[in-house]
Image 1: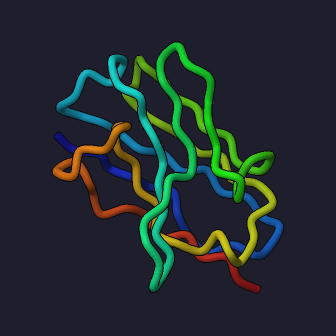
Image 2 (image 1 turned 180 degrees about the horizontal axis):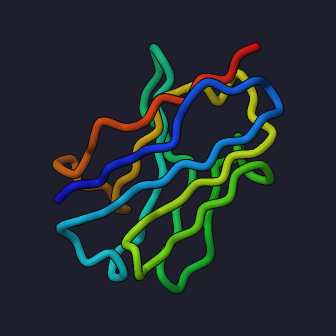
Length: 114
């Protein structure tokens, strides 16, 4: 199984980024997929999740600013992040939900700073 997150970078406050997570080795359409993030010195936290037929869920910290989506044909999960804040700075990961510890990839760094 490989979950490869990409699309991170350095962005100014108020800016936008779109993350992608390419999945292989799993039946993508059968799984609830989720984005997580881990800021320095903090525990990893759930950001958003989305099943094939279920509504998206978001943490309070990102609701209204982030949008999770998925493309079953490409086995790819996306996270559109708008109105970014310095507090969004973290390494972002994707995983199935509930998580499988063995599925964690390297993540992608998002830094929000002026």
